[in-house]
Length: 255
DNA sequence: ATGGTAGAAACTCTA
Image 1 (cartoon, rainbow, N blue to C red):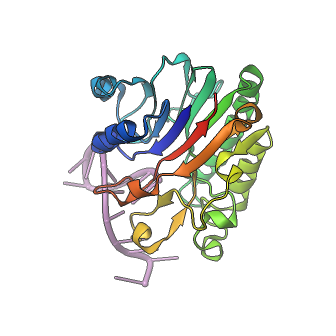
Image 2 (cartoon, helix red, strand yellow):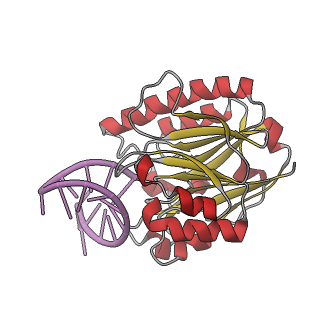
Image 3 (cartoon, rainbow, N blue to C red):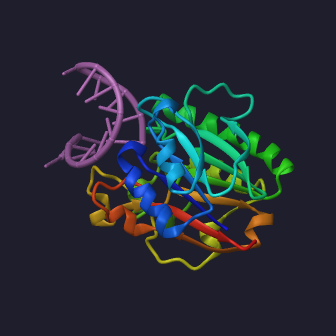
């Protein structure tokens, strides 16, 4: 079983690239973030024509998440339980016996921003909700844009990024607390190339200059991690014409 | 050089 995640930064612009990704990799599940589409604008028929089912939860201009799958999504839920968040950042479904949670964790803007407080609060609420999900679904995968680089090796220049949003200590602690629930950063189960990143800022010509961060992750419960055979970043997607600023990440799980 | 680019929307916000 192949599970993938990709922050597409506008599904309207990236739809042809998403369809190509599906055709090339044939993932069982693809989680999307930053679709930036209201639900009545979602390209359902294009996804169906590609042989995929889809559930989604979006809004105008910002945020928006979706789960594409070969098999039927069941027990679909939107958002975080007991948290009335107007921002559309979470969608979950049970697919082929795996509970899939697609997350777009807030960016935080900068550590002095109100949005940074919202991000840390949001991470606390996610943690609480994942505790419950883990009890209910031992086979759990949380895929998405976490907007957190967990370790020094996940950032091109840790010194430069020290104390900055995406890399600050409180964010990294929140990430560790998610892992401490009994989850595992699937990328680090395997040997990986140095300077493996999943996001490069458009603004600094980051991709061309190798200025990246690894902020897109697939966390797996122990029950899934023990059957995980690979985890890879599809870095070449970032070199495409009109690329998203994020590359997809994909795991393979033996079933 | 506290810059730069990209997307959506609508003369600004978010990343």
